[in-house]
Length: 425
Image 1 (cartoon, rainbow, N blue to C red):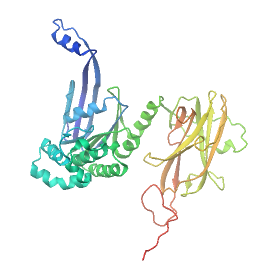
Image 2 (cartoon, one colour):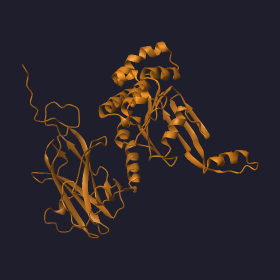
Image 3 (cartoon, helix red, strand yellow):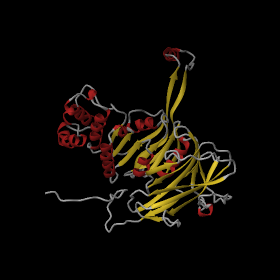
Image 4 (cartoon, one colour):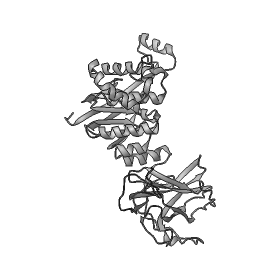
């Protein structure tokens, strides 16, 4: 383990013995011939990776895939069945709600209890107390037993303690999802600060969180590591997997044009090659174009609030009943800013016949986006909003720029327009 490595796992495995009946455990213990009455369940199976100091890593995977078990072994709560694990640095962990807290103790008493567990003296925790209480911001409830706390109040106190005990490694297991939006933003601002000189490891089902805050992502499934790599790429693959699909690559197809009474299919540019596509390919998006909504000229440069027309072209490989056609607008970090499809705007679409090529246009005003780079991901599915099958979803198929209409631009995704300002007397 190098001096620059914070966490190192080498072929870590955690096996549990599962018994059909409680008495089987006793039978196995006293059986003179060593007969086994259990089945082995591999919660984590032969996982290896390392995390560098000051690196932020997200772990993704469906429920029951072994993510929490992995974190518990890293924090020392569980012992691996086999393999080696090394940690260089003090750890502060926010695992499942309730971990490390006595429900009968008050919030104040639990603060000191956690400090004692981490080796801090009462005098040292006295110095940290104001910062903890200020961050938690739960008022007089800090003097009440934590067993009466709501989940939101509990995570406020737990996170406040975790970040104020000077950890070198911060580990979070999905706990922040129970907090309100203001507290979540407050926590992520703190995580941004931690990223400067701390190692952060957390589990989340929120792919935007993974792509925005992580340097790397690790995908765990059925106890095994599927992949370790770019958060954005793994988020796409995981999203496809959870939809029962897989990522493929788009091809520069020349779709056969058919007459269209409303728009010309010649206006639609063929889809660039080598884009990430998920879906069962029963229909495939082959082209996408954005036009100025007034001049009908192609463009990839727009202003906030500008009228635009988005054209999506697809070819079906089978008959498609109850088609859904839509798109997402995302910022450069992959956050979805807005979505639209024909169903939510009550626009009926005829069924698409096999080997038919059709185009659909969406005319709308761009949101009041701040200057920057944005992408559009078009999609075609069939069924209903609640129950549909994805045929073709093309990640970041179209890239466009938004220019500022103001002399001075501030931060944020959206521009506040038509703002009235007055000085009150």
